[in-house]
Amino acid sequence: SKVGRTLATGTAEGYSFALNQQTPRQTLQPGCRWTLYDPDTCTVVKASFTYTSSVGAGSTNITIVPVTAITLPTGILLDQGTITFTSGRNSGLSMSIQTYDGTTIRLTRTFLFPIAPGDAFSVSAGCAHTVAACQAFQGIANSYINFGGQIYIPNQEASL
Image (cartoon, rainbow, N blue to C red; front, side, top):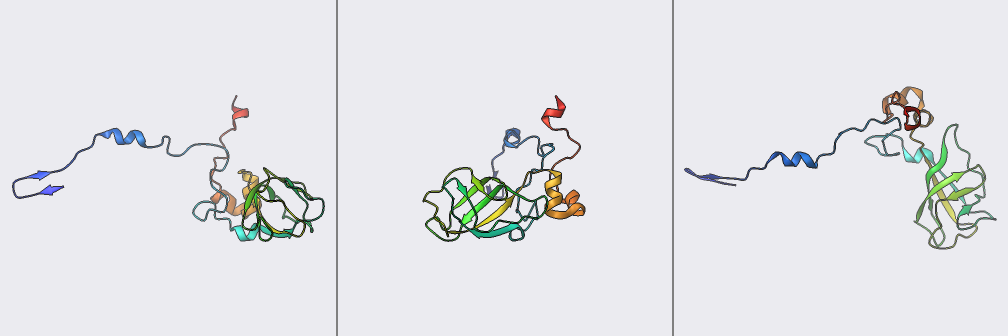
């Protein structure tokens, strides 16, 4: 920190800083560790898997019936995805999707304000963090390059 012709002062640290590092640096696990739609890891483009609709009759604060059914590509699910309202009292608010059975979206919890028929929303697909899900999003050729798990590591149930 201070250097002169006859004197130099500084600070020295022990190796205890190594105790603050996460170990192991990369966890070996069968499931993908990447975050969906992260451009640095997953590389799936969110706009390609975002769908729009509006709230239909029979909807509640925990279940939403879209006016038009949301048609998804083979292997793509809304489960663990996100719904974001673009109009109505909940405009700009997002929530996680628990399940989608083709007719009804079930949310993980209720929105802050009541949901009204006609409120517009967009939904983004979710990921199961499996090789099959990666293949559905990116195709077979790209899935082996971009999958963030280790496919030959058995899951916990199989290793017992």
